[in-house]
Image 1 (tube, rainbow, N blue to C red):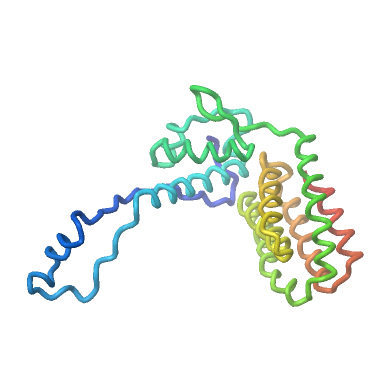
Image 2: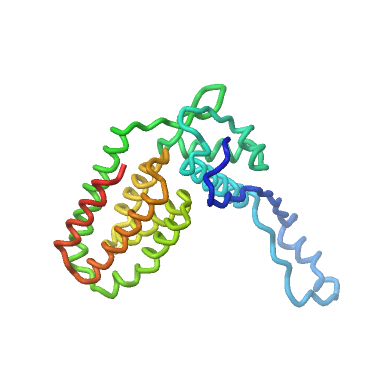
Length: 256
């Protein structure tokens, strides 16, 4: 893979799977083997059991998935290129299994496609598909934001100011991966005020898909996009529905 975008911190993916030890024997056998049964004083604090291997494996897969998503946003994983799980596993310092599982998840999300006996190809997305994703996002998010603008009190909107400021800082840093994460977090927090978890899940999935492959990710574009977040939040706090309508319509018209 080519060098990541300047200013982006690489996501550490080194991981080890700790094997859990399970007590053997039945309850009576364990009781007889205990220090108390032999007249010994038990330790002041019992030992904390180690994490189960299955839990650790899931954690490793999650770390790899996050690292691959970052590589997609930065362009480290190039559209049209085929990547094998063993090679990526070697790059991340893990076995091929969690990489393959993470890639299968990305395939379900439409970011990669399976190439039999070779690995996974990063999907190419043209302008039309990105435009369609932006249109669908707008059809979902714009009406919800307009409804919330009329019903959610100003203090609730004000609570989201730190998330909007995160997008401004990420844009100033010029790291597409960091900005993509903060951008999704801000939009998800806005929609979460609807109380509809399915809406948030679907909208967030569409948002993530619209960020692959990286397009118009220069610092200037990121700064302008983050400024729209701040302007939108100010309009929501002020309860100015007309301004909100104009801002969200313009925001989604410029996406993709």
